[in-house]
Amino acid sequence: MFSFLSKKRIRSRLDQLCSAGKPVKLHIACGRNYKEGWINIDISRKVRKDFRIDINKGLPFPNRSVDFIFSEHFIEHLSYDKGLFFLKEAHRILKPGGVIRTAFPDIDKIIDSYIKDYWREMEWVKLINAHSYPSGCYMLNKCIRENGMHQYMYSVAELRRRLSEAGFSEGNIYECKVGQSQHAELLNVERRADSSVVEAIKQA
Image 1 (cartoon, rainbow, N blue to C red):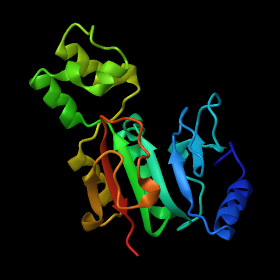
Image 2 (cartoon, rainbow, N blue to C red; image 1 turned 45 degrees about the vertical axis):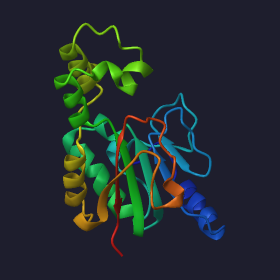
Image 3 (cartoon, rainbow, N blue to C red; image 1 turned 180 degrees about the vertical axis):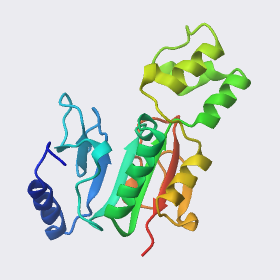
Image 4 (cartoon, rainbow, N blue to C red; image 1 turned 135 degrees about the vertical axis):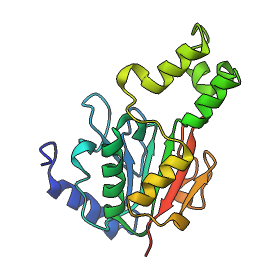
């Protein structure tokens, strides 16, 4: 199933972290943002990573073996069904008390910026120099579709609903501000200030 890597290598990496008393932290779809101290995962051959994994096929980690999972602007690139599959896999591999943190472009914010016509002030517009987009309608289509790369966009409420469906207790799912967390390992992990962020804790 996982032809890209050896499960033995993953087991060895987990054993090294555990023997050193360090938490197991997965950075999903790291892209060009390699994080030291994390297990960085990506499908691309062109970026620095620790393991090349196709998330659509699952996460080849043992049950209850991971302390923290972080992704930024990734889940919207999965289909509706694959997004839930990913969240269920995250729930499976997290230890009791483990945390998944997801930063994502919020469809509610995007639509609000379109309706109230302040979208040119948003960080992502400045980031990609999209001021020249001819209209708000054009912006909305580009942002939601991203040339076919975005498959399902989330709001905070929608991600909370899907996390609940994946097995996380509703009382353990909460919104965070960018860069802020009650968990020291998850402080200041985002690069995108325009994200919405949701954390969920796996029940003991």
